[in-house]
Image (cartoon, rainbow, N blue to C red; front, side, top):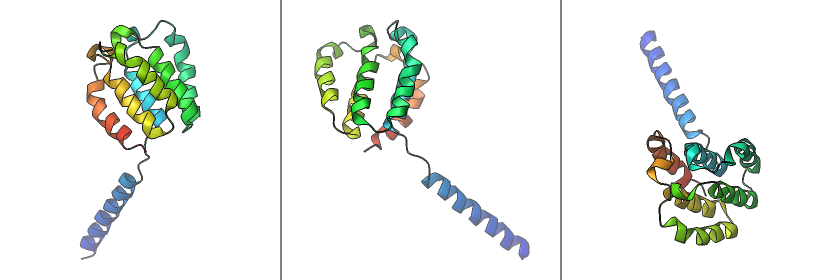
Length: 146
């Protein structure tokens, strides 16, 4: 009897602990997700100067936290350092409107939508081979941002 009660108590404790762990899982920030998508872009798809700026850019994104004004500039800087041939042909016509939308974004939700649009503009060969496996989770976490 004691063994059965003990087993039930352990199982219940594990279930509660797992539930707490899952429900307390830290939500991703826009900056973290921006850094993830940047890391997916292959070096040959970026400008020659990006390698020198990248580490400081990552730190700037991290430091920005939820500062929309700073994140707008950093998102534009990231896009500016993607080579045109790394993006789908329609991007050439869409880019100016996209840049204007980013410049006028007033919320994380607006930046989220613009990051989704930017990532969607990348050709398949722009990103690492494992990105397709990671993309769905990244996209879901990005969609959860408000």
